Length: 521
Ligand SMILES: [Zn+2]
Image 1 (cartoon, protein in one colour):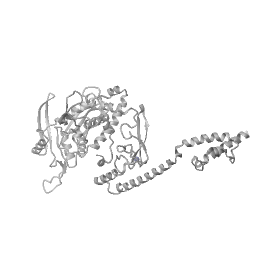
Image 2 (tube, helix red, strand yellow):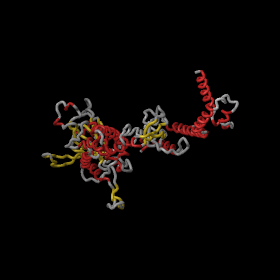
Image 3 (cartoon, protein in one colour):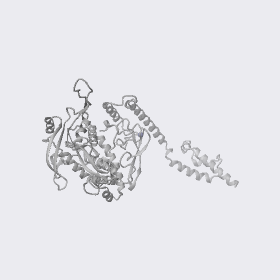
Image 4 (cartoon, helix red, strand yellow):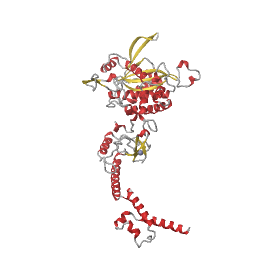
């Protein structure tokens, strides 16, 4: 036992001795490993067999170790210098870009643009001094409180770098990124509809595309071999995402005319078939989709789902006011629903204090009055036996002459709501929940809202509108035997100059909404 213990001690001593010197040092001094362990002065020369085997193995291992390469150290120094210089540059930029915490929160657009240009002029180099191979301008950090939170590049606060990738199903890879401000690592799907989903993105695109083309939840689930609940999950995410995208892109619009209308549908049951208990549920029964349409660009400016009451009309007009540019007051046209008059006065009117009748007594109550540039006209339809018997028009606010001048400027001869009526039909074609007779009706109002958000964003950005197409100066021949292409297809968003091309459904669902609008548009 004592002898074995002594051998073990010697072995450990040899190992400790062997690891103390690096091969570089021994090579530099001109002493080979073999000579070292076989020299007569070595205390281990008695155990010749063991040190030789160990020396061979250890030497081979050391040669294989990459960090022993002296060039590696030089590269590391180079990297740290580059990193330091870049940090200094960023620090300089941040001093200029960071607004003071106390006061001026509104940074002028020129200043922001100048900063962006300054950053664009920076040398595009990564840590190793090469051009970065991974584009990161389309990605932002999703950590709340981070300096780069929801900031797309190029911007002084945008500092995202590539951070490797990982394998997902079927051999596909997913890119990872790192925020250099908060040091958090995140995947390319963070902040999109697809975060945390295991289904391939292509399947989700196709399923949501089907939902935008009048397919029901269960039909889509059967086609793609997933559960209906999975489709509902995708719909919820897509609806929330599209609402953000529409709110982000549709603002400060110049609108000449707006047509207002309501579309009937129902949730869970039709009103007349609801039981007494079901009537207590406020969301069940007849539901109305309130729409405000710009007939020039065919844009749905605002959309509200709710009851057939004045409150919803006010909501619709407040949303409309938030979308159009400040000071712009379009010509409003609707049907004869009385809720609109009060709603228009509440949103676009002004409070006036009338004079007293005599010189004594209290002043009359203040009342709402239309402004001089507010124009509102109605189309009055009379029904007999469920059919329209006569149609008359009238001007409620503003002068008749001014209303017809504005209509003439838009190429219209008479007051009408035909564009918004046609939009109702388009919505019924896009969203299966709006079918009058069928089983695809909504069971919950929130899902109807999400489905409408998705369908309207699809209608704005993805689906070309036939009424907006332009004739090409010369027909373009097709590659096959088909007839030449005569028309240039356009979407409502292209018509309103919100974008310059027809989006794919993929582009819509992966669009990232930045918190800095002036730089990204
Ligand atoms: Zn961050």
